[in-house]
Image: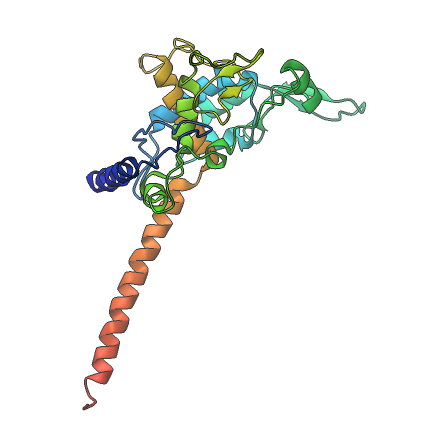
Length: 278
């Protein structure tokens, strides 16, 4: 099945290149680099080890600026996700300080996180986020992969690509994080901004978040820049679609049911109409 998916994807990409419309001249951004994530396609599943590495990158680096408000610590231990043990998830939650209250004296207080808590924001409020980031509020990353598309292909190619590869949101995040570079010759440098060809308009306020060797992976994986970018992109894809594996499983069961039902109806039709002479 993976070979078939790659074949159709390759055909779609090749046709887009042949037509010369895969990326129009003067486009605001460069198409994300293709990458074969394990969760792509109708039978794809998340790589548990990759999700756990991606969580580490998010926690150690991305959480310094970006929230993950739709993910609760208990989700980290649920089937279909990173699948930390409950004990590990509790330990992860306890590493965060969460505001709670009011107490008996009517005052708010902080306590270690619990499984039922959402991942807390790095900033107490939006104004604090603006003050720390030159007036810009770092976006929440809970749905970032679903909210961004990695490719801009012609209308007759896009459905094929999306069927087997999705919207390219994970590829976009991966390419963006690892794609910072010096502006091309003749490009006017914008003070306080950073050049990235994968970002619409090419200039963004966020400096390069990763440099490689930013974390130490427990499984011995070498934390290169592209490895960290790939892992955190996969983790954010899960955060955007935490029930993806269950949805695919139910969808395939529904298709199987409808196929069997259609076959039974065909057999009933033939049994009934075979008695009637035409």
